[in-house]
Image (cartoon, rainbow, N blue to C red; front, side, top):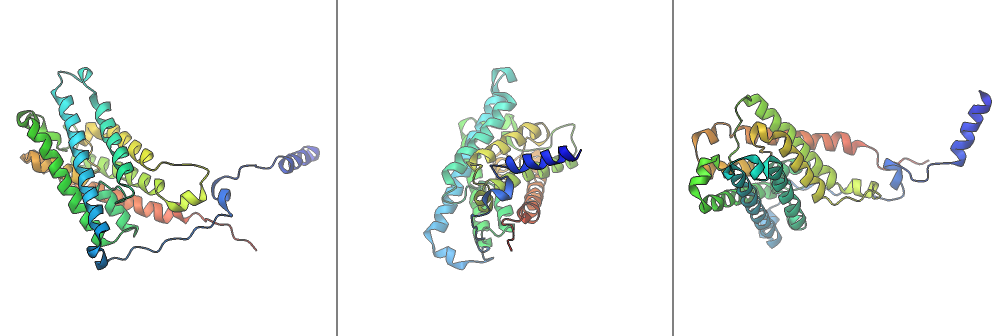
Amino acid sequence: MEGKEEDVKLGANKYSERQPLGTAAQTDKDYKEPPPAPLFEPGELCSWSFYRAGIAEFVATFLFLYITILTVMGVKRSPNMCASVGIQGIAWAFGGMIFALVYCTAGISGGHINPAVTFGLFLARKLSLTRALFYIVMQCLGAICGAGVVKGFEKNLYEANNGGANVVNHGYTKGDGLGAEIVGTFVLVYTVFSATDAKRNARDSHVPILAPLPIGFAVFLVHLATIPITGTGINPARSLGAAIIYNKDHAWDDQWIFWVGPFIGAALAALYHQIVIRAIPFKSSRA
């Protein structure tokens, strides 16, 4: 037994880990935590970049609703699922559009396109309350306009197929719908935090990440899981825009779920990432 232990020690010394893993991978690379965004920043209101970012959020959310609800209407119009892109195609439309739009707008506004994402990032002090409120207003206006354009193409088809509005489907309770929205938004916002974390990028730079890609995949996968339950909200602006343009009573009955659920999910994801994930030591202490 003693001989075997010596062999193990010899092997450990001779064949040491050539590629350090995790936090050990970048122990020589420094990282400075940026200061938290101020709660109120009146100076932003005098900056063109502030309004440019809001316009980018408006246009991105407009395009997001336009493409995704038009895809839903195309599926509803088909005689059967096999004659259309089906649920998988709807999920790809949502995920693919988020991938494309985050890629296009990340350098301008951060590519939120979702009040829940904005809320989560605000809780983590990544942006000011002034900017967060402005983003949410512009996102909701963009969603309303996007759904309105789709309705303009064919009003009768739009109204006959619920206008892409989110509701809790038959066979599920409101609690089921709320739970699906909380968990689905948690997955999305947690992915956003992980994919855009500068600290992780410095620590684990040997793992290259194109941030819009995992975010788009998260949206795609959540839609696959929860379309049968709620039609998948996880975006209050998307749910509000469709409900306002469709404007039927049953579209408003469950509207609170598509605000409360995503905001709770975003808050939980922000807390989890900031308290648990980022609590991992970045640099080992040296004597």
